Image (tube, rainbow, N blue to C red; front, top):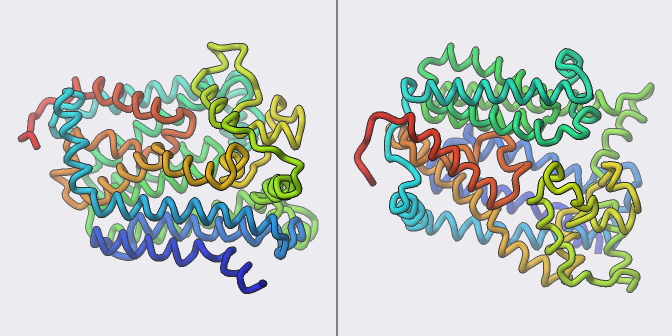
Length: 430
C-alpha cells in the first residue's frame, strides 16, 4: 500500500516532465526556455504541498483522506494533460479559426505594433498604474510605508482597497507587455528596464508576480535576442526567483532555532490539511453533497462589492471555509481547501470531471500560451497587433487574477480595440 501512496504523491512529476518534453519537441525550444522555467519553479512547490505536511506531522503520509485529496488533483491533472495535447495537436486550425473570428468582427487591426506607435499606449498605461498605486497605498497606509515594507502592505493594507490593487496590477501588466515585447531594441536597455520593473513588481508583495514577470522577460528575449542571451536570462531569473522564494518563506517564518523555522516554513504547505478533513466527513456520511450550490453561487464573484453592497461574504468555494471555520470568511481568513474539494463538494467525482472538462478559463489561457510559444521566434510575425491579446492573456503577470473569465477576456478585447487606434502601419492580412 505504501508503494501505491508514493506513486499517488509523485504522479505529477512524470506527467509534468512528459508535457514539458512534448511542448519543447513540438515547438523546437531549447532547455533554456519558458516552458522549462515555469516547470522548474512549479514542480518544487507542488512537491512541497504534497510532502510538506507529513514532514511536520500536520498530516500523516498514510492518511487515506490525504491520499484521496491528492488522487483528485491527479484526476484533474490527467484531464488537463489530455486537453493540452488536444490543443497542441489542433493548434493550427484553432488559431486560424480564432483570428478569422476577430478579423470578421474587426476587433483588431492587422498592423505592426512598433516603438513609434506604442508610445502613447506605454505612457497611458504607466500613468494609470501610478495613479492606481498611489490611491491603493494611501487608503490604509502611506505610499512610503508600503514601499519600505511591501509584504506588510500586501498582507495588511489591502482591506477596502482591493479594486485599486487589481487596477495597479492590470495596468502595470499591460505596461510591461508594451515595454518588453514592443519597445525593446537593445540588450543593455533590456537589462536596465528588467531591474526597474522587477522592483515595481516586488512592491505588490507576492512572489508569484516576480516569477510571472521573469516568464515575460524570457518571452521578450525569445523575440528580440539570440540563444545565448536567453540562456543568461533563464539562469539569472531561476537563481533570483529561488532566492526570493526562500527569502520570503524564511523571513515570514524565521524563529530562534533552525528547527522551528523549518517547521514554520513547511506549515505553509497546508494545501491538503482542510481538504483531508472534508473528504473524511464525506466518506463518514457527515457531509452531504451541495448539488451545485458552490458552482452557482460562484457567480457572485462577477459582482464588485463596491457596487453591490449586499454581496455575501460566503459564496463559491468559500462555502467550505464557512462550514469548517464559521465566521472566518467575513474576517478575510479563508484557508485553502485543496484544488478539487469545491468541485467534489457539489457532485463528487462527477463534479471534478465535469467542471474540469468545462474549465474554459484554463482552455483559453492554455490556447493563448501555445499560440505565443508557436510564434514567438518569428519577430516580424509576433509583433502584429492580432497577437496582442494572447500575449497579454498569457504573459502579463496576474492579469486574470482579479477578473474572472470571461470578463478578463472582454476587458482585454476592450483594451485591444482602444489601443488599435494608435496603430499606423498596416500589414498584409492573414
